[in-house]
Length: 321
Image (tube, rainbow, N blue to C red; front, side, top):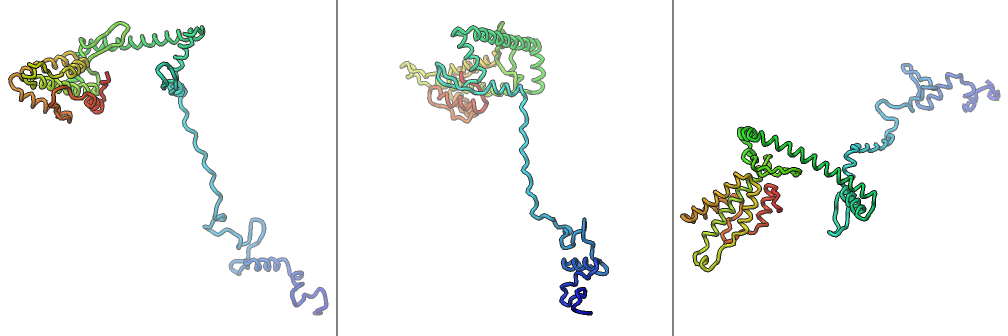
């Protein structure tokens, strides 16, 4: 071959690409990309949907190791409050008001009623009509509640002995404290008042209070008979007024038959004190030990505030009055 012939391939290979056939060109390109095939695994065809092997995804390996950041999950909306509950919460929310009694918090509904009442008193015709309407509706609701209350207690009076029998057979503590007909006061147009208990919680509280009343009875008798005759001749008598008042107030909460048991106990303690003052000492120690309170030996009623605090804490008794 003539080396000067332009059609002859040059020895340095600068013109060799122009003399290669198309399949050879593909093999050269594949070799340059590290994808030269073998007899068993011929070089793949490179083109559409057939990328070079060096650039393909490896099995089990992600094509995007870092991955795309997850989108933030939007917080779920809180459950909707029923409309009636929303209205109730709105009307009962606390509002600050200032009047002759000073600044204080009252429910929004009460504050609105007071504003209507004040506006009506100042001469507003519209507010006076609204005030009269609210007053009438409130009275109607009260009378309905009273009528329902009276209906319940009339049925209770008819069946109270059956209630006592059934609850006594079950061993419920409330059976002893159920009000009898004489313990129920039903006045026309008034809420029913009763002495006693109609729930186990009320009965447990009153039962605890009765034991405390009995301890006070023993304390009063102790003070009377432990005062020396010389002191009595000088007109020095123990102050038993507070104890007697406490006994009277607690008896008003009990059914009449249980309140009368306190009178029997008082008479019995008086009788025993005349013959055996030591018995009163032992009884007082025993009665007050049941409340984890040392028996008060000094004459006079012990401080009432810590005693009432203990009663409220242990049995949630309402003794504020």
